[in-house]
Length: 214
Image 1: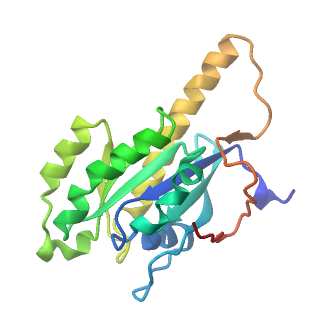
Image 2 (image 1 turned 45 degrees about the vertical axis):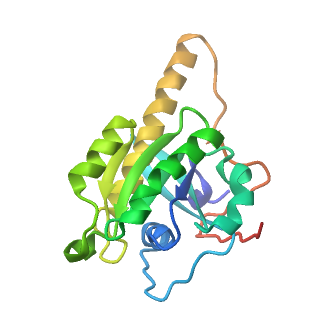
């Protein structure tokens, strides 16, 4: 195994939200520092990976992106399986994408693990002149529903790194506290913790796309 393939934890994080809110560009900005103005709607599912360091531990994030259109709803259960984190994304300039956050949150809580760490993300903050969703309203919603909250711009990279880093640190804090409990009880974890990664997924260190259609 090469040094680049070594990690202490592997976390699956999903991106959800309406089509067109910028999920794919958030993914490409974080994993490849790229933004594509001509990006088309995601067909089916794709994922990419990137590693960060927290408390001298290497955390590898496997981030999944799916189409927001209703026609791909059949992939729901497989998409959420094993996810320990979720970024619930809306467009700050489109009120309807914020209104639909409730539906996405319900779907997430119906299909994902009850301990999943969720961050509400108001994307396209560069469109502040077209803002339709007040920041304080979204903050209040996040607080009421026990979600983390941040506003980002995949276009100019504002807070994109922060969004992914904070959610990964949040997951790590939960996992490490559980490990401390296990250590206290004399349970010895194996080397290289893989946390809730979908069985059968072929992982690679570079950004990887895995497309399928429902």
